[in-house]
Length: 115
Length: 330
Image 1 (cartoon, rainbow over the protein chains, first blue to last red):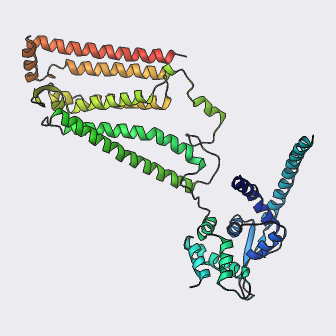
Image 2 (image 1 turned 90 degrees about the vertical axis):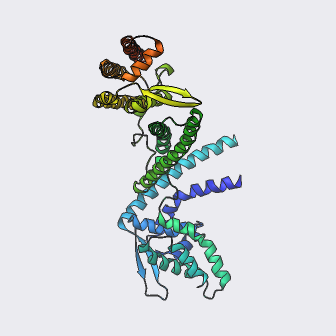
Image 3 (image 1 turned 135 degrees about the horizontal axis):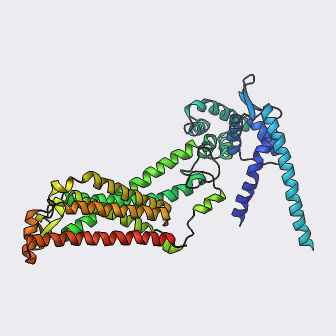
């Protein structure tokens, strides 16, 4: 039961991950700072998925990257591209719409239960 | 080498050359970000544990599918496999048997021939099966990696549409052409083609001789028989084409019945022309047989030719008629 629940939860979250990452990249972030930002918001992200995800987004030209070597430790920064911002805003709209619909659906369910 | 270096190496060695350096650099900087300023091996282990297995991480970077054939092609793959595997097995079996008889000089006992064929046939089927399976899988694995995803495909390699339903046979059983029937007709083609081209080794009088079959005399003059080879090859090609058409259509249609009738007609005519060639039958054979039945050579000749023509005409007519009858079933 709990194992099934786990895999279902992971599945639920998987789709939202891209959106969560894109939302935090309006300002340039490097890998670990992004993890921390997401963790603060309560989003627990599997790091072995995050770093490859960033590269994929870069390949899809949603984000651009640059190495900052001015500090003691070189860091790769990622930031939303113009195209990425456009896609992000649309994706966000889509998600809010979806979650509203789902919320109503689940709310109806709850009302049924209380009756 | 410390654990971090080994970890990075374990990840990057699975990646393509050109992206290795960049990913290694980023990974190192990330790991160091995650570590406290002063760290010991325990801290390193904790961080690496968070990053997870290097294999999983590398596969995340690779984007290459971690399966051989994905949902897009799996159904097509299985369907084709089911279709090709039996065909390949039957075809190879037939050619194996034909090859065996071509080399057969009649010096082996019947039981040995049967056992030999069984053993060889089994080996051939297994070998061909493995070959087909391997190559089809390789082809699909390559397609999987070159074509980018999408919906599962139908056998015609296009996206599914409701029109595809029309191609699914939902007809009465009597109208259906079973695969066995198709294989049977292919097998028949192979058998008579082999008999035709190697008649001087195969068709004729055999005498039992202590469990061995001895080939006494061939029935036909091979040179005369082979004069007709171009037209015979045409009939063979026609027959194979019809069998394949049956395999694809899987049910009798008017057009198929018509094609079948034309084939039967041509086949019968060709057969008759060859049989009526006065030089066809081997003289030794005629003498042997007429002595056997105690009739004159002329009588035997006319009996044999007439009988053969009668039989082939009957079978041709039945086949043509059956085709039309099945095509008319609704």
